[in-house]
Structures are given as structure tokens and as C-alpha cells.
Image (cartoon, rainbow, N blue to C red):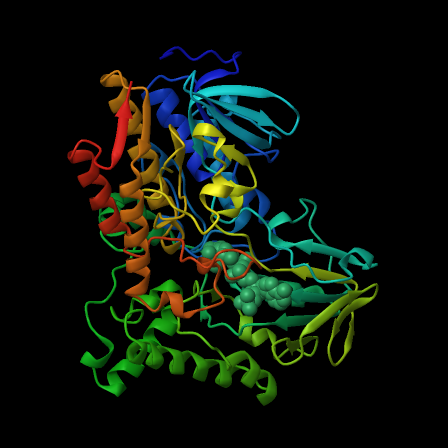
Length: 540
Ligand code: N01
């Protein structure tokens, strides 16, 4: 195995796809800690992954800034200071760029380079990787750091190609921004993204029409600038913050209350929900430990949140449509917002319930629903992503005996620990399906995955091992665990969620992330290592 990095060579120890949170840290670990020749290939013209692409109005992280960052470097934690409770897209992008410079990562990141295929060659035990521009690379280890939400889902609505205005998907937002001034804007989609973008678009648009298919809960973010006292507290309490993010299932910097919904009286419960609503953010989900375990428990949160919508939104018809939510609270990824429901009180905003009045076409001049034409100058697709499997399957990945990943996963993703696929030796998938990833505050699972992969490769080098892949029975077992973890919660009850792949026509309906929580997942990974990489076949 090569140990000297040779920047000129396209023949590497490790090739990493994607320069977001995952890919950058993986590069640092393999290059600087193990001394491997490693390179990142990144489709974008800058680092940052999701934060490079998602520049839509209002884009902001739903994790609190003091936990939405790397924790591997004490120095880095001291050097960077966040300005707001929830960091905005531009600030996160600045942070990731700072990290890239700080650790001299850019010299091994090739920007503007989209990987189109990766084929495993059993004879040489190497991955052969080709880019859109026709460049070739080979590497012993291939690590995908492609993100879970990086393949835009633009619904195939007839007529879009003839629309005479401009249209954008939020996940591929133009760098120069979009001027909504004086424009009639239509926004399709009311997930976390649409709930962030609508209030901002409404501020300058002549008129905003929000096309809602599934009504959604949202809790106020209560975003605000961080006080000097809080910033100081963060600097002095890094260990305490990490102790919490590493011991809570969702890896957020707050604990889930150790009480059940029916441990308290209805009056106490109301007061708890009110306090959480005032405090704002995802902590609302942490008010009781059984909110996602029991329908009866969840119904109490559901009714509280629907009541808030009816209280805020003045027009009763609009309020009714916004509060007509068909799934348990937090069974879809729970959004948090700044003035989302209030936005519908503006004179220049209207809601179209496309469950009742479906979109039938896009005409040259706007959106046509069954009952009406909605003239528009601009359409914003806040319609989400082909999540988790999409970013992997759009690359032609072929393992042993030319088996394609698309064929291996034709009935849904199958892997071990979310990290490796049987038949694809030396391929690691950071935050792949089957990992807790999207159910968590992402930097925490990302660091865990990257460090696990790094330790695994170090172990292989120490023992002269050159190949690793999971056993089929270990994959069967993990798929069962992923299914069982989801089935123990209310998560699968949101039938249309992207967690299930339900937002993309024809995609297999499989609950993709591991819902057993980050703490349990970390322990499982540690046990696998302690038992000599149980479930994996390691060979020379
Ligand atoms: O996408 P979504 P998103 N006609 O899939 C609707 C993360 N995130 O981009 O529910 C009409 O959740 C669709 O309707 P339905 C976070 O993990 C993080 O909002 O399928 N409507 C839904 O309303 C999040 O969960 C942050 O019925 C159509 C919407 O489009 C994930 O990204 C911020 C339609 C899509 O919602 C994805 O969120 C934002 C059609 N044909 C996002 N097709 C932060 O932390 C789809 N829809 C900052």
C-alpha cells in the first residue's frame, strides 16, 4: 500500500466523492492521520456540499450552531465563533471554507469534477473511477461522501418545458440569487425548505402562491443573534456539549425529557408544550420521551400544534387547510420556521391546497390546477430530493462481477451498518441508507462514520489486509434491524415521507435511515470492531 501522497498521480490509496462535511473530514483523516494518498472529487465549484448548493432564500440550519460543527479539533472549536442560534447558509459555507483552508485540504480537492462511474476491478483490487470530463482515477478505497439530500427532485409536471417564466429548484439555487421584486411567484412544496423560503420570498414578491400537497407542522425557530455570554459559555463548555450530543439519540445538544406524555396532567402538559413553543426549535420534540412511540401521546402534541396554526392564521379557510395534517408530529422531519404561518396573513400570499385542487399542468404562463389557472412569473420547486439512495444511484457504481448498485438495491437499499454493501469491496458509504444520519444532527454521525472508516483502514494496514466487504448474512441482519427500529416508532406512519422514498414515483418504499438512535448505533459499531470486525470478511 502506498504511504506517500503523490499529488500528481491519479492512482491513489483512497478516492472520496464529495467535499461537504463528510468528504473534507475523511480526507483529513486518511491523508494527515494515516498518511495515505487521498483525493476528493467534487462536482461543485466550491467546497460545502449541501451548503454549496442550497442557497435558496431563508436557507438556515435547523440544528443549533454550537452543535452544528466539527468537534474533532479543540483548536478549531476555539477559533470559530457562530453568530446566530441557527447558522444561515452563507455562514455555514464560510465555516466549511475556513476548515478547508485551516487544514490545507483544498490542494487535494478537485472541484468541478463530477464522478459518473466507479467500477471495481477484482484482479487489481482497485476502483476505477471516471468523471464527466472523461478523466480516470484508480484507488484501493472508494468512499462516497455524497450527502443524503443532494439529488434534486423536480416533479414531472406536464408542460414545464414550455413555461415562459423562470423556475428554480431550491437545491440548485443560482449563486447570484433571484430577484422576486414585483414578481408573481409560485412555490410548490411545504417541507422544511418551503417553510423556510416562503416567508422570505413573500417579503419582496408582488404575490406568492404556495401550493401545498401535504400540510405540515412547524415550530418557531426563535432564531436570534448569540449573546457574548452564550458564545463564552460555548467556548468554555465544549466537553459538556459533546457529552450531550454523544449521549442523546438525535445527537442534538439537548436531552430528551425522561417523562411520558401521560405522566403529567393535561394542564402540566399544556404548560410544557407552551414553554417549548416559546423556546422554539427541535427541542419541542424532546419534551416527552414517547412522542414518537405512542399515537395517543403524539396526538397531544399534534393537537397543540394544530391549535397554534388556527390561532396564528387569521383566514379560517387557510388555517383549516394548513392545519389539516395527516401524519403524526415528527413522523416526517419536523420543520422549524421564522414566521411561516404568519406569512399567510399577508395580503400578497395565498395558499392552494393541491390535495383538493391538484396541479394538472404547467402552462406557458403559470400553474394550472384542476379548478383554476394561476398566472406566475416564477416557480420555486421546494419539492425535495431523491433522498439517500439517489445521490449514490446516479453514479454507475459496479462491484464484483460487474454487479451494479442499482441492481443490488432494486428492491431498496441493503447494506451493513449503512457503511458497506455486499459485493462492493473497499467501498464505504458515509451516511448511507441504514445509517442514523438524517434522523440526527448530521455532523455527529458524520464524524463517527469517518472515524470508524479511518480506524478500519488503519486496522487493515496494520494487519496487511487489502480487502473488506460485509457478509450477506450480516447485511440481512442489519436490514432487519433497520426495519425493526423504524417499526418500533411512528415514523413509518407518514406514508408520503422521503424517509420511505415515497416522494419519488417508482422508488421502493423502504424506511431508509436507522431509527435506533445514534447512541445505540455507535455502540453497535464499537461492538463489531471489538469482535474482530464481526460481519465483515477481511482478506489479503
Ligand atoms: O423536501 P421535502 P425539503 N406536487 O421532501 C412537495 C432537510 N432540510 O427540501 O409531502 C406538489 O421534505 C411535498 O409534498 P408531499 C431536512 O432533512 C434541512 O423541504 O410529498 N407538491 C413536500 O411538501 C428535510 O426534511 C434543512 O405531499 C409536491 C415538499 O414538496 C429535507 O432536507 C432545511 C410535489 C417537499 O418536501 C428535505 O426537505 C431544509 C408535487 N409533484 C431541508 N412533489 C435545515 O436543517 C413534492 N411536493 C436547514
